[in-house]
Amino acid sequence: MTSKQAPMNQESYEVYNPADGSLVGSVPAGTPDDVNNAVSTAWEAFRSWSQTDPLDRSKLLFSAAQLVRADQKDLARLLTREQGKPLRESMNEVAGFARVLEYYASISGTLKGDYGLSKTYGHMMVVRQPLGVCAAIIPWNMPVLIMGWKIGPVLATGNTMIVKPSTTAPLTCKALAGCLYRVGVPESVLQLVTGSGEVVGEALARHPDIKSLSFTGAVPTGIQVAEHAAKTLKKTILELGGSDAMIVCKDADLEAAAKGAVSGRFFNCGQTCTAIKRVFVDTSIYAPFVRRVRELADALQVGNGLLAGVDMGPVHSKRQRDTVHSLVQETVDNRLGTVLSGGKIPDSDPYAMGSFYLPTILTDVDPDAPVMREEVFGPVLPISEFDSISDAIERANATRFGLGASVWTHDMRTISRATQELDAGIVWVNQHLRIPPEVPFGGVKSSGLGRENGRYALFHYLEEKTILIHP
Ligand code: TXE
Image 1: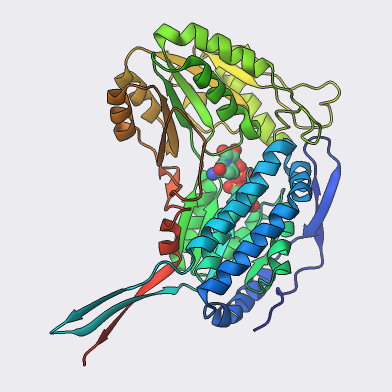
Image 2: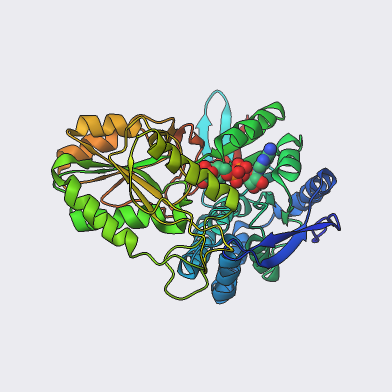
């Protein structure tokens, strides 16, 4: 088999640091021809990769994880420079990538088939075989972890993979692929085609010889990708974001809930699909809860993620930051909520060159305000109060999204009811935003289709073949 990646377009484009506008690096600007070449190379590689022993694939994934852990600091610095997040978060994300590889290394080859013996049909066997060439489209918000979620199950099951990293944060993904190559994963088995979504992403979605496409990004893009995928009969996984609600009941541990709200919202500058995007608080504890959240949010250090002590970096791009700010302005202008803290673009030094936004708290927010229904992808926390748990659940569900939700209480009846009735792919109790690789991840409603993570992802990447042998 060819072990090399198909050669790519010589033209490249540059990647900039959102904290100060400095140049971080450059990558090839992929073309539809690059996608075609990568697909042919990946099919050729599939012939032998799919025949490798699952144990050998496990060993490669374990070794790659070890190498990623050894290079963790350099990889994390690169991630912070191209994405903006604080170094501490980048270190965790790189470790998360390694953990995902280790998880899939540990379950590679565990999905065996079935067997039965029938008087009429003879030996009835079901074997599970890899699909072939798979593709993934990665966003800029958690590029490293999401690449791990997408490549782990694909490589473990003996499929080959073409990854299109985010246009504006492709460098750490490239460096991670380099770690896999260094331990012996052939380049032709895991190829990266960098470039724009409209060119490379669309060419992948339209390609007739790609068997599965896993996409993480915005709802309209996901729908467009799904239309192309349907026309070419690809299996798809779509992860399209969320507007996660947090419900804080009157018996909740107020300190834990306030800390949970602040970390769950301002982590990664609010740019996480399962971030807490709306908070509903029981009327009886609304005032002390809001006070504590404000204290914690005002104490966050905003700045260049490479600097020690920084808790929140810039928004990933000026375009994204301006969208967030206009949603806050719209809330205030239409009297749909009040800015308690933040709500501003800081333009003095050291923020002037970056796309920063201050941690923002909106209170007394109208449940029908756009900030309460849409996905606000930035550091904005809208809080409102509720009288009854029925009211809280109804409001939490009043959005087109359904990715995650959390309820903060120790009352078993409330836990039982909320976990049943909240319309979401994940429901947390007394925590939020924790996503271990062992359990399925994905949403309902407009948050997407299908699940990543856990052994469930292996089913997606394997196809059952029935064999009937009459003696
Ligand atoms: O997303 P896009 P954007 C949400 C979040 C954010 C909004 C816009 O609300 O504010 O989306 O972000 C590739 N065919 N999320 O504009 O454009 C693109 O190059 C195929 C939530 O960055 O959807 C990138 O690799 N691919 C989310 C990826 O799709 C295309 C994470 C996502 O970009 C394409 C990110 C096309 N026509 C944003 N156009 C989450 N679920 O966590 C673009 N792409």
